[in-house]
Image 1 (cartoon, rainbow, N blue to C red):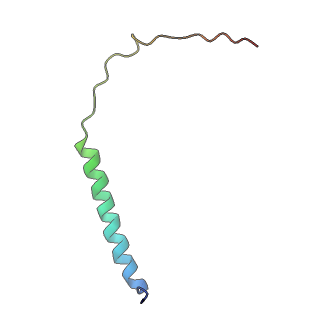
Image 2 (cartoon, rainbow, N blue to C red):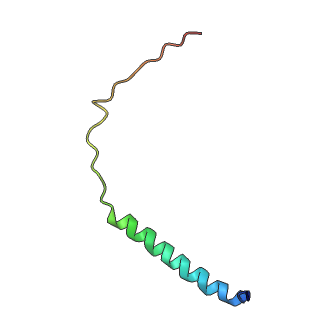
Length: 52
């Protein structure tokens, strides 16, 4: 089985890097941010009592 020439690795790297960047950019732009309601008022604070 013949080996690939070293010059062919650079275009492959550029090609797959461009695909990876486009994929991540599209996934980032597709998701809409979820509005978080005021959670601090409903959060219960628990105090820990340490028993040594």
